[in-house]
Structure formats: C-alpha cells, structure tokens
Length: 214
Ligand code: ADP
Ligand code: AMP
Image: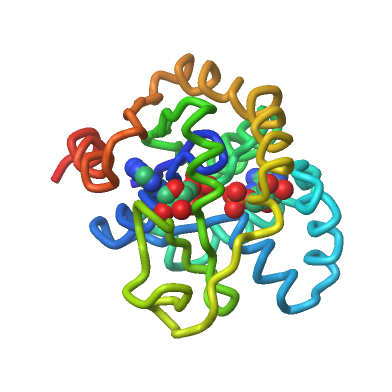
C-alpha cells in the first residue's frame, strides 16, 4: 500500500503516518525527519536544507526528489510506505509519478488531513520535539509522561525554531501557494481522500482506517 499524507504543517500528518506505519507494517518516510537528521549530523545536505527550513521556506525540489526516489528503492519499501511531507509541490508529485511509472507502480491513496489555519497556529505553538530522536508531542493533546522529557529516549523536548509563530505563518502561506494545489492534482488522479483533522487523534486514525481497510 503506497500512501501519501497531505495537509498543512501541523495538521497531524506525522502523528497519523506513524500510526499507519505501525498498523500496516510499512515504513514511515518523512522528508522533514530526513532533513533534520542531516542537520543534526552536519551533512552538506543538512547545511543547505537548514537555510530554507529556518525561514519557513521549502527546500528546492532538486534537493528533495532524488533523495526520496533513492529511499523508495530500498528493500523495505517493496510492500509499500507512507510518505509524510512529500510531495509538497506539483513538480515533486510529477517526479514521484514518473519514478513509480517506470517501475509500473502508482500511489494508492493521498490522504488529506484537513485542519483550518486558525487551529494550526495553536497546534504548532504546543508542539514539542525531542532533541534526540525527533519524536513529537503536544503540550495538551499528546503530552509526555514526564513533562519536558521524551517518552521514547529520555532526552529533552524543545519548540522547533520553525514552529515559532512568525515562521508558522510563513509556512502556512507557502503551504497554500505551493502544496495545496496537490489536492486538485490527486483529486484528478482519483485517489484523494479527505479526513477531518480537527477531531481527536484516535478519531482521525479511525477515519483513515475506514478508508484503508482493516
Ligand atoms: P505535521 O506532521 O502535519 O506537521 P504533527 O503530526 O507533528 O503535524 O502534529 C502537529 C502537532 O499537533 C503535534 O504537537 C501533535 O501532537 C498535535 N496533533 C496531531 N494531531 C492532533 C489532533 N487530531 N488533535 C490535536 N492535536 C494533534
Ligand atoms: P516537516 O517536518 O514535514 O513539516 O518539514 C519541515 C521543513 O522541511 C519544511 O518546512 C521544509 O522546509 C522542509 N521540507 C520537508 N519536506 C519537504 C519537501 N518535500 N519539499 C521541500 N521542503 C521540504
């Protein structure tokens, strides 16, 4: 099963993608996580990506597409995957379709987690990310067992620089301009499914399971 998660930054793509990956036993591939891991490891790609990410801008398509195509060619992707944060532009979607087409494959579902902008600003202000493993939480909606400490690895939680209110506004603008057109793209392709992302995390997940099947 090949699944794409669509939605504004902070809509809950990562939260749901992790649950989908666990239930259907497929890898969760987050381009944001890949870039953050590169930044942490001080790679050339990380240095380049950081300059865009810190400003709330998208990393240029040419730095993203090959990276994702290489990842999808790895063995663990044979049975499918859930892509979180990619594609984010029409050229990225076309490149993905092109790469899959060469292998006689296609995306099965594009799931749009729909959340209005007003909710997003609140969500992002409460999101906390682990400095160690990158796991994300929410102060109110997905709290850790011990305040400020990651449940997974015990390291400290922070507010990501790109989750600060001014950057979130910028990212939302970029989303509307460059990413939202993908809703039409996947509607035309006949694979768009929309879920209400404003309800509880478990209820969003149930709506997704209803689409993907038990
Ligand atoms: P994205 O991957 O789309 O940027 P995340 O999955 O990281 O978004 O979610 C953004 C923030 O909102 C996180 O702090 C997360 O815990 C919280 N969150 C996710 N889904 C919900 C939901 N349905 N209701 C309330 N908060 C949520
Ligand atoms: P995310 O964790 O998915 O919200 O991504 C964080 C940041 O990484 C984004 O704001 C972009 O700067 C960058 N990024 C992640 N995925 C992509 C992508 N597919 N195309 C361009 N930039 C991306």
